[in-house]
Length: 241
Image (cartoon, rainbow, N blue to C red; front, side, top):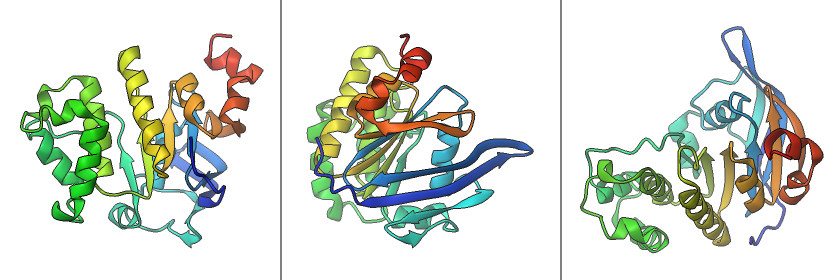
């Protein structure tokens, strides 16, 4: 599923995030290995999306350090983090509904220019044929699942080296969720490193080489995706076992 060499791409050490006086994330450590899918799972409100937003520079860190390929990126602003090749697919998709599908995809390549992103556009339209059929149509006319495909496609247009995905299955029908996760597996198959924040614990851990379980802002468990899928605590708390 991956050509991983188990080399650390992103290292997070002692990350603390506060909202006012509330500790949202409490001193967590984790590592993303190059070429792998890593999943951060847990219940709603556990601190998963907050963690991801903080890594993208969108939520301030109270303490902690973030290293990307050995470089300290903790103080960088969001656009500087994107310039390093770290791109986020936001929760809720955040597509521009009054623009066409092609215009939304073009926005993903704004830093590079569309001419240099021709091969990425070809790849996105191959990955999501439904977008190809409706390129000149308004993004607002897409279904929820198609909008999620567009959000992922827009991020791929930036030619990321590390892709963050915040709740990509949220609000989607089960058959569409399967389709999205098949696409994520295919994207990882090209060698792209994925960090997946997801409430759908079963789907996330099925495609992840490594997983972390976040509970009330603290790391509760870690292991391979397969180990966590069979862990009694995960089965009981998240998988109805």
